[in-house]
Image (cartoon, rainbow, N blue to C red; front, top):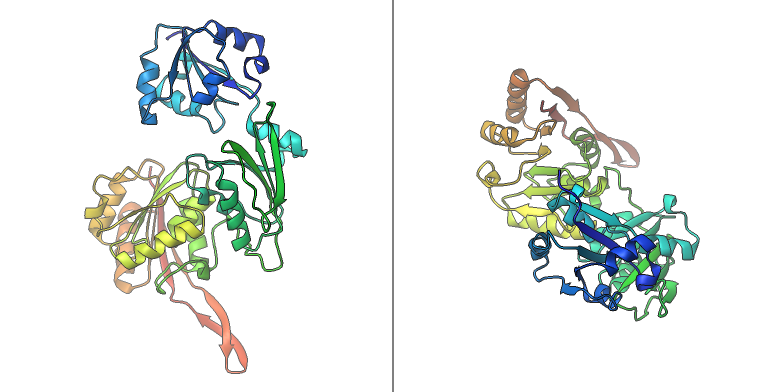
Length: 400
């Protein structure tokens, strides 16, 4: 087992004065320090070789590895393992070779200034990521702390809130927390117009207006949340389907025949970091899916054109597979072979031919068969009656 040789030190606006004595000693005796321009300026009195983050950023790992054998320090902001580069480094270099020195994070500093309980809020980052990722967390009463990308991000988030009827929400932007230039800017989403410094943390207290669009992060969004051409997995069936697919943190879904993206978008909304690839041959439906992904806060949905099974070649192995239409024996064989152990396979059928194939697959592989019948109340003249949707046959299995 290798001895630790790399120190990743969290530093705040106070610079070296804000570090614990042990962490400060590590920085002051370093032979080489790697960090961003801001981090290096906070430790400018230390006599060590300085290396700025390389470009592209992915080259950082090779640069860090090249420092082995020297007293090396990487400087980051706040807690190295909380939405910070420390997690990326720990995936590439064995953690036993690293010593982490956490500092108070921007989340903790902002919560302390607002008097918010960390246990009762959501911590998010859109730093270097699509800002739309925060949209699923907009709900009445929610408190959000968000690491932003730059000065324009609070204005974008205020826009998302206004568009969804959450204009009364209270926003507070913090910059340079803990330093001599600390700033705090407050206003509602409806009135937000502040010029915010580039490095900022945004606090959002979501307050719904009278016409707010209130959506759950649980599966089963209303059908009219999705742009579609009428061919989609309907709300009630979608909720049952997602229950069988079991979204999990960081898990990957293949949605074969994704259509407008309703299933794969809900998969990504339900579990933190969940990923999805929607395979859809029709460009118009892929366009629907892309628009829906942005509107509903899953901008990282990956859409692939082409017909399965050929379009599945070379894709990363999934943790779950959903086939909502167009199932064939070849599609099943290819997708099931790629599915990881304990992966979930769910297929829905509405035609007799597809149902017959599901019965044959169930006879060979086991799993559960269910018939889903949904009726919705609708007007019948002056009265109201039940109108049934097409029944759906569903087969599901966890691969062992």
